[in-house]
Image (cartoon, rainbow, N blue to C red; front, side, top):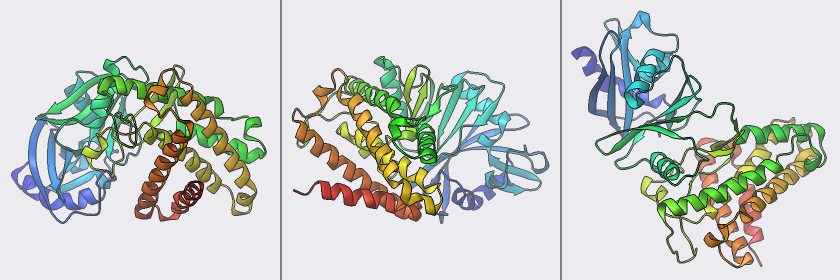
Length: 396
């Protein structure tokens, strides 16, 4: 990278960051480069930048090529700056540089790479449909929760997380993790929406629908209980004041974070709720935090699928939506509550269990309402309706 282009970068970075999904906020007023490390030299060099924007550190992998030789995947939003016919851009959208990065991180080689999908806070790439590399964009000193929890679960033999292959760590910062890619897996959210579309197309009883999700929901409940027991083994149990047993939890548990394969349900992405501070996300919590998150996800799925129908159909399908949510809620809780050993982490009294679960569902719904107001105001009514219902259930 030429000296003049390097000087241009800080001026161009605010606009670049403001265009990225993984940047938390609007265009920053000022960006400074705190780390500039050469990762790979040659005709197409790659550098690793750490930039400070709005008091937060972000990682950017940067490539540079002649502007008329950019790969097709390098669209305008990925270009940071251009000067004297040379473009500097996000290296993760360049297949050649992405393949080189996999080798740097893990020692693995591959022939093909593709993006894993649009993520809110990180960037993941799939290599040869066998390895997925998650590059962390927002950095914080100390272990990243996704790395910390995934490797700890793997160490205690919990085999319902993708097997870790390599961790990229420098100077106390977790930069990326590579793990096995679950080829042929089906995301829980997509499965739930398919089930709901089948139900809404036919109407009637969800138990009689061809896409009934209840058996999968029950198995997911069992896997969730096993997850919590494994987390208790890996990180220990803390005695709480209001909750008898606190453990490390997933922290942002919903249908989009689980995937079903021929070997059962797998659990992904242990970074926790991105709007909460890192230290808060790493604190022990009640297992019901995760249980409540999944139950709220059933409500979201039913309501989102309902919005896909025409306005004239929706009122006639509200009963079916409520029945689907209740059926899968009951199935998930049955799988969870009947799992061997889970009673050790939960209150002994059934009434207290119900009260604690309602408390965490209400807490989650309030978090959702704040999120929707900030990002998707058209969806505010989903958590608002849930809050009203949960508050009414808590009244004598």
